Length: 94
Image 1 (cartoon, rainbow, N blue to C red):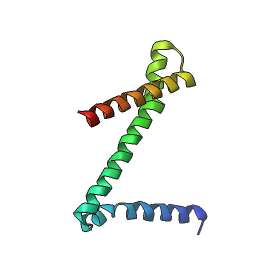
Image 2: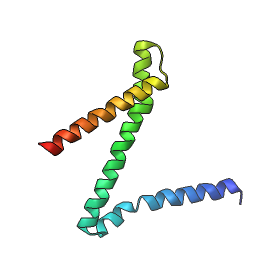
Image 3: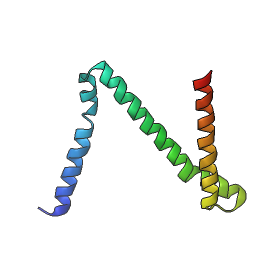
Image 4: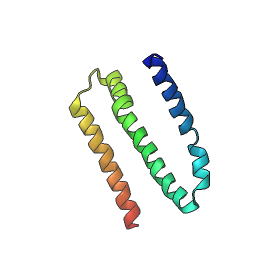
């Protein structure tokens, strides 16, 4: 059997096993499920933030200013982090 067939079958099996994650999550306790949900939502939010910073923001910037460099990316990242820190401080203090 060619190696390509072996890799294809392994990929299909792996994807099929990933689809059984739903069955596994139903069987675990509610406390663990809440903890796992928090982690998964955090990963999803981080992925969306990374996608916006790396892909969407430079495209929007270039359409307006005709250039994008690392300094612009650093300024945007620092601004988003400062906004997050200020909003966290407001939540914690009041």
